[in-house]
Structures are given as structure tokens and as C-alpha cells.
Length: 112
Image (cartoon, one colour):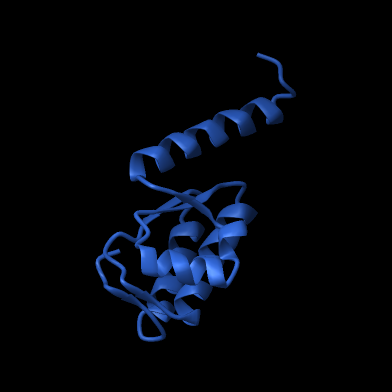
């Protein structure tokens, strides 16, 4: 994310982007929020939509680089219990790869 604000001005475009990417086959999202300084309820809603799209596609959404202020808002709204949050993009990518491996093993019945 290059914007400093995730608010009602940006969230419709964000939601549309998430839906389009998902429809094109993307099931895993790593969203770097390191430049975001402000999030309102519509911005959080856009993240929840992205998370649901990933979950429905048997994928994962990970948020990275969250500033203290944004993290405080996420915790106040108790979304830290719902959303996967990791410090760096590299950790997020590793986490997603591990989930993919686990899903493949589970799908194959543990054989292989």
C-alpha cells in the first residue's frame, strides 16, 4: 500500500482490487501496511473482505509492517484475533508457503 490512509475514500477501490485479484485466481495476499498511518472502519472492512476472499479460496492473507497506531486500532477492534499479522513480507511469504505445503499434504491424505 502506498497510501498513508485506508479510509472511506480508498476502501471501495481496495475492495474492488481484492475482488478482481481473487477472481483472477489469487488466493494469497500479503498486504504491506508500513506506509499506512491511519485506518478507519471502512479500511478495516476492506481488509476483512480480502481475508474472507482468501479463506474462501483456501488461501491466506497476511498483513505486514503495521505501524503502532494502526496496530492499536486493529487490537481495539479485536481484529488481531481474526487477521494474520507478521512483521515482514519475507515472514509472510514463508508463512504462506508453509500453509500451501500443509494444505497439499492434507489434500493428499498425508501420503506422498
